[in-house]
Image (cartoon, rainbow, N blue to C red; front, side, top):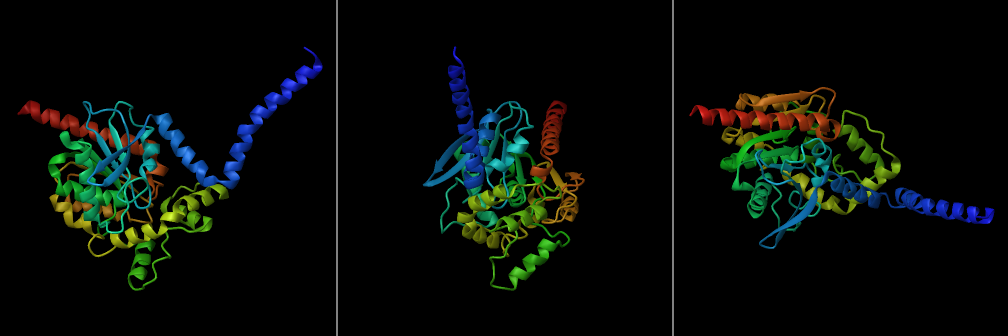
Length: 338
């Protein structure tokens, strides 16, 4: 082979490698929102999660799942306000692959139907999630319910309304009770006494506000590139009007203390996981719940804020699995003794 042929091969190989690298750089700099969507797609595929849709009476739920119902209870995971089913990927990564896991987009969020006439109160969301559970026949056997923040509020009320369907549940820093005030609670009081609803810390409109939201929600300080912050803003921007609607609904009179009002109806074994440095829903909420349900298990995480799933995914997965096994063994022991 001549020197010219070697040089040609070198340039061809270099050009082949350069194309994907340039494409990545272009996506990172020009279309960071597209890169974020590819990131979630990649992690779902890597973790073996499949996306499916469940239709019921003209309403469509989007969800991802892995595994099939088996010896362990199925796990249904409910995300928080303005998030989506993929927020659970970091936790799913540390759960055994044989477990049957279902992560659903909450009403109006991401791929689940959004309508102008929908009831986005906590009770309204509970009704929709029950519709989803029945549609995919998840309640053929009792399942373990997990919810974080707004999803924790919904999960708690769900367990109170449909106790026969739940074998156990995990609430991660759920809202919906009367804890001690945080700076965020003071902000809510300011909103209640004004008609101005756009300045909501959980609905960022600029990269700077997105960074502020991360500081509010997370005790761990993540270094996020400006392009990614912009991409996150771009992904959320078209939905901000909807987020404002949902936010004002869930902090309204009918939903704000929904979990507190339903605690006495919860019969399933309960696990609470809370970040000690939570600035959104104060950790004193764990004490409030434990006073009503003294048999619940409380796991408080040091150096952790509201975004427990993002800050402590491995620890969260381990705690959930331990609790599921503990409760299942307790039920087996009860059956044997009887």
